[in-house]
Image (cartoon, rainbow, N blue to C red; front, side, top):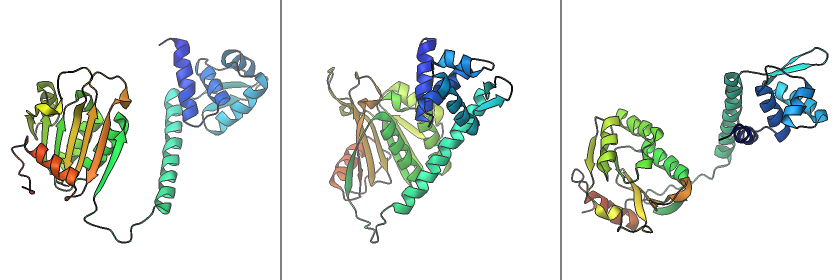
Length: 270
């Protein structure tokens, strides 16, 4: 990535974090200077000079820029560490505020049904990983995870599994290849790890054949199954279904298929 491309990406990310375009451009200009006047910022950022002053005032109010009151005034960006901490705190505060608003408006089920049956679909690696981690963190007694796609084994995933180990949950981890089982065994040495031997997970040998990417069974009644095209590119290639309910037909069927490859688990439905 060239310097210009890096700058454009940084400006775009700053906008994602709440800055307006001119504010982001001015901040990036100052990040390339030890300090600068409005004229110098204008020349680097290509922000109209009359708009530089407005942008700088906003950046100063947000703690991202310092001002030296000389004639002409001189500006400098705070350190990268300080800037990222400021933006992170701002972002975290917004998320916390949003969370409180969402919780206050959330529909509450007055008559919770213990036998509720549900099936939902998910799309995209990030969304599926987030749901996988949530389910692992919510587990009460047992986790069985089969990993087929090695890309699933992220640091975040290992952290979640380690938390489950620390909570003393029963956990069985299966991998479709030696590389996957080796990684699981290395990162989580105190868990049971084995090679699944379930050849149907990867389908037939075809460039267009869809394969199972992951199967997660939590407490025998919550199931997540991911699928993907192994030769596809991009993080959006993975799809998944999420099903809940001990009597849910999908959960029952796949629980029995999965447990057929997990000799340590006895399916209570059989």
